[in-house]
Length: 273
Image (tube, rainbow, N blue to C red):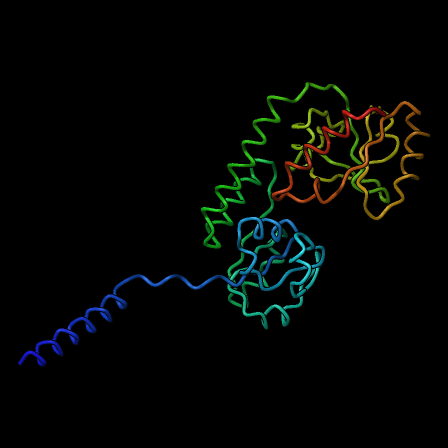
């Protein structure tokens, strides 16, 4: 009789365990993400979602682990067959709706990340945290970045130096008043001479730059002869013009290193010419 009671008790506990497993909510499956912009890669790794990235595009090279991701394309387009082989559930892009259509046709959820200000970057970090299941880490990162911004705002010396930012030299392209780079310049205490143009990266010409007469010229250290560009601007603007060379990865990517970009601008200005 006692043996039957023990057996019955074990049976009831086993049934109870299985019922509990059935009724408890199961953890959601991890997303399989295509990170189709360098800043998206950086954000996902920074919030602990690097393992969810299954594919990326050219220039997704930070942190070091991002260099080992499968490549499915570039800024100009992606290989849809290669993307499909990776079985993605989500793609985070920085492009236009035209780039979204092919991905959506494959049943992939498409999210667009195109921050227009530093505040937008913080909001996008939080949003990617929610989307990837890493909300806690994302919120912590955004809060840390906000605290750094607050410190910079308090410590920043008001500057009146006008600046021309040479995004590219052939054709000559600069930073307009729309977009996160202009916001970064303002937060660094600089006055963008082309801030009145309601575009992110408008084309300009030498005559327009000469009329604006900037005191500072910023040159990103990518794909150009920086020394030659410095000589060019000193020839046209005078030997007194201040030339600052910046790391484009800190300025051109609206991701977790954007505060480092603002700091690098301030530090470059504080150095003696």
